[in-house]
Image (tube, rainbow, N blue to C red; front, side):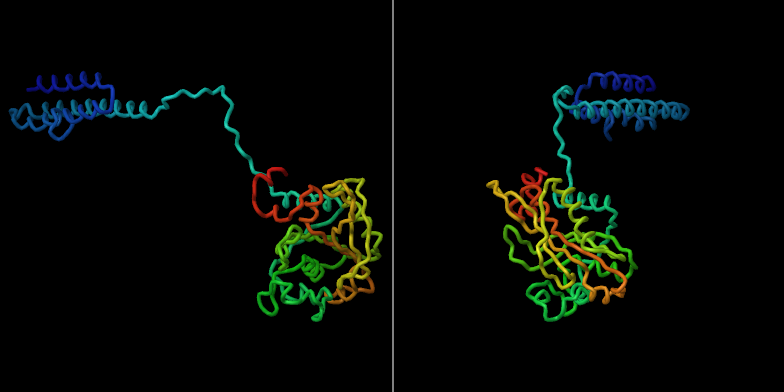
Length: 329
């Protein structure tokens, strides 16, 4: 009987060496290792042996079963791994598949460039909430209740005293409320106005405003800063001008125009933004001594700057997320 055990084990291992695929391996398992398989049946035959041979037969049967099972599992693992190998060899000398690497949106690129320019000029950066109250958005900026800018149809009101900010001048107010002069900051951010969407208008856009407050500040300082900014951003040959204007929060006030070429090559003056000396009423509202300090401020639309610099003719292109357009920048 023990010799029969040895022969069954040897036959199983010899037969296993001839198996070359998983289907044949499954047949082998059924024949030898299944519940009614030959190796499994060895254990059931131990009970027929004399009492003194049973321990030796049990050890032998378990050893044979373990050896065959171990060889079976190893072959199964090898065959499965071989089956998963690619059928075609990869030519590592061929060019790789190009990977598209993301980059900042053109508005973000423009904003980063603006902040870098003003950083070199010694300006800090301030941020504020996009949901504002009337005090910061209008009252402290010397915009009275009769001013058309406060009309509900020209703003996104949330309730009677809360709205989406219509200008980043609100950040200037918050800075002046908590900071004593000297102040020298730029305030970037999104603003909201219910304008009809067309090639030059959007209900949401970005602004960058600057504020300087100190003793002895004049329009000469403002003109110098604006000129440095324009020449750094658009180039040293860019021509610009002041045009008298009116804003409730600055006096005197001016519009800034650039001489730009259109698609036909003809040069025209194009409005870029507004500026002026901070109105004393604004200083009084935030607790700054208007007899001691003066200041200036200006604000430009970031989309407008990007459109003029890169020749973009429709503001809607900036928000459609068309990669064919955005990949150009």
